[in-house]
Length: 284
Ligand SMILES: O=C(O)CCC(=O)C(=O)O
Ligand SMILES: [Fe+2]
Image (cartoon, rainbow, N blue to C red; front, side, top):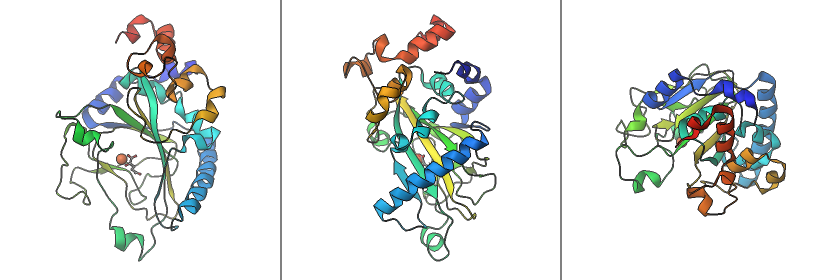
């Protein structure tokens, strides 16, 4: 892993925001030329997906498990400006448990708008976890890093909506999940921005009225003991991956037991942090 990631550990301000608001924004994470390359790859992969699924061109696509579909996607898995913030929050026993890519085309009059309204559908992530876990609030367990590849500095562009602070409540802070609660904010960010959000925050996608499709890559990180939320079709990458990437892609050298009671070989990220930051950085 690139040692320059040590310069990008979670700052105190980011930590305060994440704990208080349930999300924080980090601009200028991806250089412009990489954003352009990613857009080309996303359009190719999304185009093939839409064809396979026979999707209408005006519909928002949400392709699960995109991680294995192009080498460029692998680069963002341990991106120096984002991964250290993930392990600063969750610790070293982490994995990618889920990836999904969304492309929101420009709304078409008479189709997207009338049918879907503003297109919001507020939810917390993780499906059954929200029924099966009995505490208030429920535990965090995972977070997502969303890489925005389109300029979303204005509302109405298919922005990601969040209700700040709502990660600490189990119930939806409104009446109808298809209507944004008053406290909702659209996330207004330029291309190349990463947004980190707690899986529990009440959030939504929305309709895009801009002239260009909205493209976002979502990387979900969790503790290693959580079962992946998609197929994680990544075996073809493993020969080329360093030990930390292998860990992040779900490898456990000790097998099943190594997910809940990892030995050092199962979690090379732990050794790496210890080597660079000292034993006290990996106490828990
Ligand atoms: O596409 C969006 O803006 C929302 C996606 C979402 O709900 C998620 O990543 O969990
Ligand atoms: Fe979501």
